Length: 184
Length: 184
DNA sequence: GGCGTATGAATGAAGG
DNA sequence: CCTTCATTCATACGCC
Image 1 (cartoon, chains in turn red, orange, cyan, blue):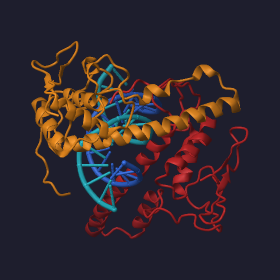
Image 2 (cartoon, chains in turn brown, red, cyan, yellow; image 1 turned 60 degrees about the vertical axis):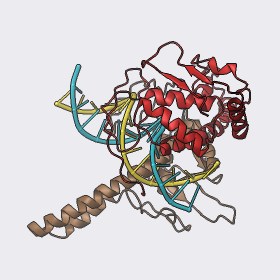
Image 3 (tube, protein in one colour; image 1 turned 30 degrees about the horizontal axis):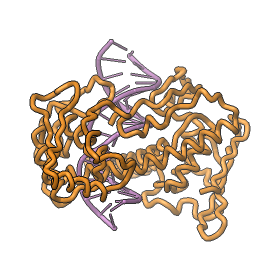
């Protein structure tokens, strides 16, 4: 319902506006407006297989991300909820489109390479079945669509000391910018 | 997936829409969409201490609320389940955020003026003036999560032939708008 | 200055 | 009771 509006936040980094220019408005917000760094890291976590962080994880992630700007636990919570849901949604839509593609190919006998391209187009968001993405160390996955080329080392041993951390490649936009995810 | 699709309902009062404007979509719904009155009353019941209404109570509440719009028992049931759960959840997250905030301020010497009142975010509805009538009853007084006490109190009320009713303070948005809670 | 899109936030409904 | 999914509302931003 209508809880009181949370505070304001004045940030400098707008996320939306993928058209490089980033015509960032000084954005005073009544709702959380994640910074690019926050989004980048959240996305990375998601890509690494995290889908539904526990309360504990949420709390820690939130704490870590608070370095880059105002953020609350619930923002993280919602972010994952939404991201997951919309990926599902997108996937649904995609498969629908694929069906159409098939039909189209049948109709027009389009070269199969189209399928390949289409797949690439939509493959941005990882596999459905959660997890396993970064299973073992060998993951040098600079593979696809990594604008920033994050180098990432992950390890999902729960029994062992989970060393799950990564650092930004290239430009450190903020001083430390070394987010340890080992706390997960 | 059991219950058949409920029909449609066209209501006039939308609840969501915190910006007063209440951009009420003529809301055709496949799922229950409570009217403001319904929510107000449910909230009031909750606030008065009701957490887990019995089947019987649910039935009665539902019947009463049906005056303000389409509603089924299960809606009431779910409402309480969700509301209770989310109150807990919010409380949890808020306290975390509070801690986090402190940490953040310590870490980066952030201006304390940023001290937003996360509380507001998670307060049920603020200590709204809405209906102090309930205060008249021994019913309240317990801070949180005492569902069983509620039942007891409710029973006491009934035993005493106490007519437990109240009317919406201030604005009567609908003519009668007098919900008798004595049936509890 | 009204769209369309992306996405934050909320919450009804289930499942377990 | 807890967690999760689906759907919806609200809003920010870019664009014309």
